[in-house]
Each structure stands twice: as C-alpha cells, then as structure tokens.
Image (cartoon, rainbow, N blue to C red):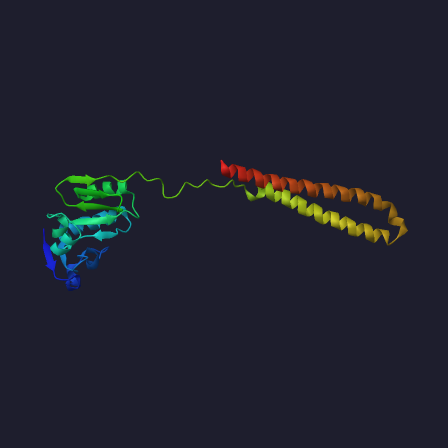
Length: 224
C-alpha cells in the first residue's frame, strides 16, 4: 500500500488528500509537523468514521522518530509508519468503538482508560492494557410525564369549574346589591340569590380541590 512522506503537513497537495473527515494537520506528527500518509490506514480510519457516524478525535497518529522517543513510544511503534491512531473516547462508547474498529479491519488494540483513549493499528493482531469499564448510559432514561387529553384534563376541568363558579358568585353579589337598591317588588328574590351564591362558592372550592389533587397525582406518577 502506498506510503508518502512529507516534511510538513502543509506540503500535502490538495489532490493527494482524499479523507473527507480528517485533515493533514490531524494526522501529522504533533512534535515536528511532518507526515507520512499510509493510504490503507487512512482508508480504514475513514471507514470507521463513516461506520460510527460521529467525529473521531485523533490524539496521536503519525510520529517522527524523535517525537516518538520524546513521548516514550515503543521502539517499533506503529505510529512511526503512520498505521496507528490514538482515538479519544470522550464521545464514544469504548465497546461499540472497538467492535466497529475490528469490523473495518483494525487488528491491534491498546486500552488506556485512565488517559481516555484507545490505540488502534493495522496489526498484527494483539491487544494490551486494561479495558475500559462498562459505562452507564450518558443520560438517564426520562420518565414521560403523566399526560392527559386536553378535553379530559382533570386540572383543566377543576380550574375551569373553580373559575366559572368564582365569577358566578361575584355576579350574584353584584345582582343582590342592585336588587336591594331598586324596586321593593323584587326583594323576595334576594334570599334565593344568597342560596345561589353559596352554591357557586361550593363549586369553586370543589374545583380548586380537584385541580390541586390532579397536580399532586400527576407529580406522584412522574416519580414512579
């Protein structure tokens, strides 16, 4: 497979770079800026990106011999020929990531849970390091709130009844005052208005009670 060295990633011709989700700067040596393009390795890296459907944060790819020594890399590290990548697990489930990497053809795996990345390379097949602990879901499953059809809403019915009854009771108060101050012929109606006002007040209190109960009941359901 073709391997092309460049003294600096800025020297890479646009036509030579075909990996749409990565840039030469991402794959270049972090110490010197030099780059060795290994087509097969980058093809598999792009295939992994396509398979996972989300970004790969490349912590380290190609390393110059000097930079490899500086970071304590193995003497025969696959980073030296551009066939290895250290990928951050920040936005990936390590189990799913490893499975996808194996599926596209990576064979060498190094696990670095304390540093938060996984090493992948073209092989030979081997693995080292302590595997990542199984992660819990990033977000707890949400309990859907207790919903009601608007027309059947207990809160709406209770609040509505309370509101109508309150307005009705106020209206009776006004009517009673008006009747008292006008014709003496209609004074016999006033006691009935007192009774009607009492009915409205009772309905208003019942509506408020229903609305409060409905909200408390919905809250309890949401806690289950």
